[in-house]
Image 1: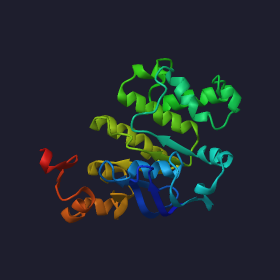
Image 2: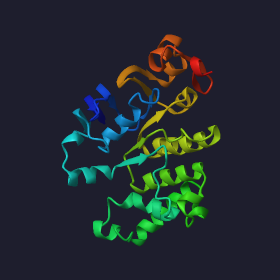
Image 3: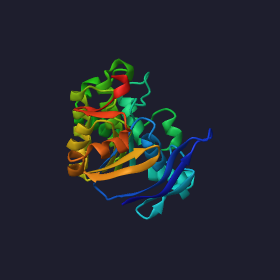
Length: 262
């Protein structure tokens, strides 16, 4: 179980990105975080694995406070937490297989990682991961030769290489068209349902939330302003919607639209 207790993040310029965030996530949940850009979604996810250091609060996973771990223990904990990024976060000049193998960096001798020397079993695991996401035929292409959807599949395969117990997906489909978005979220759903991997995923569009989430929290200005189930999202009132997205937002089929921008 993951428990976030009184989490606060204030950046050096004084911006308060998170303000007293509290929630729990049971093992095997598919929790979706919704809210406008700038609401704190990315900061929250990155605080959980300490890519961003929280200012205050605790992040407790299986009884261990992640915020108190030294770098060695944090490295060991991060092995179990996969991360999928909105902009893929691939090494563009490296080939696809090498990018996927980087998911094993937390498991191999740090000196060997300088030269990307991985055991044969890890290389086979990478091949299997690429098969699983349907792009084995792209294994030896440079990452920047791939389409956006293909690059995000590389990101999913890389996360699989960690054999994670939890995946943090930071706007993983924001730059993809609807078909590709369902494709990527379908991989996450399959991992969640078949392997019991806990998923925390930030999304914009309510139709995707309704399809994939088991539970939802809504952020606005760094605060939780909404909590609900998949069924609650389907039945969301206009007042609840505006509480998350602002008074000027109107609901459309793919999410929201600002009246002032047409």
